[in-house]
Image (cartoon, rainbow, N blue to C red):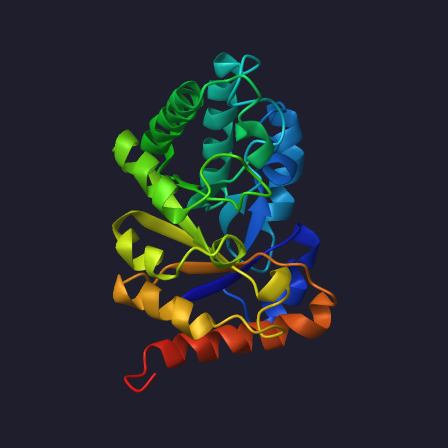
Length: 261
C-alpha cells in the first residue's frame, strides 16, 4: 500500500522526510485548468521538482456548476480535458471528484435531472481519461457537505451506469463514519474502487482519535485493494503529526493482514 497526504506543494519536503510515498495536490490551485498555457507553464516546473511523486489530485471543480440551470457543459468539457491532460503531464494517476458545491442539487431541480447532469459530466471525464489514462474517482461525501452521492453504494451505482474504465469510485473513511455507513460497503462495492481517503475521529490526524483503521483496512485487503490511501485531515501540527500518522496507518495495514485480528 502507498500512503500519501492531501496537501499543498510547500508541504512536500516535510512529507518526503516523514516517509510518505506521494502527495495529493489540488486541481484548481495546482493544475489551473481554467487558465491558459502560460499560467500552467509557470506552475508545472515547481510540481515536477517536488521531492515526492504527485499521483493524485482533489478539489476538482471549485468554480462553475455541474448540476442545475447554471451548468455550462461546454466550459466543463474544456475544463475536464485540460485538468486530466495537465495531471497526466506531471505523473498524476487519479483525480478525485468530490466538488460538493458544484454538484449540489439546487432547490427545485428534480433528482433525476440532477443525476442526468452528473452522468453527463462523468462521461466527459471518461472521454478525457481515454486520452490521458488519468482515472476520475467519485468521492461520496457526507450529508453535511453534499446533498447527492452520500455513500459508497451511491458512488458505485453511478460508476456502473457510466460503465467506462475512466470513472471509478472512492471510499473515504471520514465520510463513511460521519454518516454511519458500515465499512463493509468497501468490500461490497470493491470491484469499482480506485482510491481511498482517510482521517481519524472528527477528521483529526490518523492515530489521534479512536477510529479503527485496522477494521477499515481489512475491508480493503478483502477486495485486493493495494493502491493508495491519502490522508485528508485537519492537522493541528503537521510537522509533529505527519510521522506518527504514517506509522499508525502502516501498523493498521499490517494488523489488517494478520490472521489473528
